Length: 214
Image (cartoon, rainbow, N blue to C red):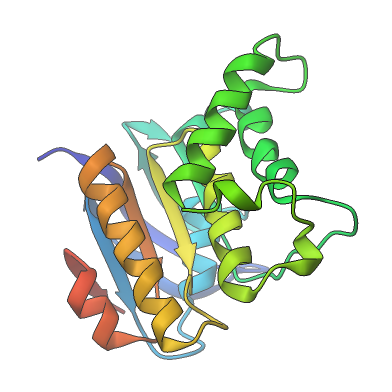
């Protein structure tokens, strides 16, 4: 099986301060891989660096063979997407509009493929089981529904690698299990790669193909 994400001597941190590394990682394509570590170790910082939201302190990150820190924003969006723990509840924004942002960002602001974007949006919502919530405002969603909408937005972006920071945070146990089942089935069906952090070690071990301990 091919690797989709590799790092070479990667060190991550902020303001020239290294909090984690050096790391040499190899994440296999079409897998769910969990990252396990104590609070404060740098899991979120690592994910943000892998997505090129923040620069690496040193070392390199390659996604599908391309250095993620040396390509354009639009090209990067086609390779990797990220779902953070931020609770996004923008006034007046519906589920469909949120998910549409993912497909629009992948096509670019001057996209002439709006019909294609519409199809990507619909497919992403159907994959997460929230198609019937399309016209519902974000402010009226449960935490579980909102998390599914955020993941659907990442799916609509069209990248083959999705990074997720604590995807089951704020969810009760039933909702956490349901979300992991959805993700596991999605990976098996589409060959998508998911790299996630979680404090729920039991669910990570149950549904993760591999676990990285930091």
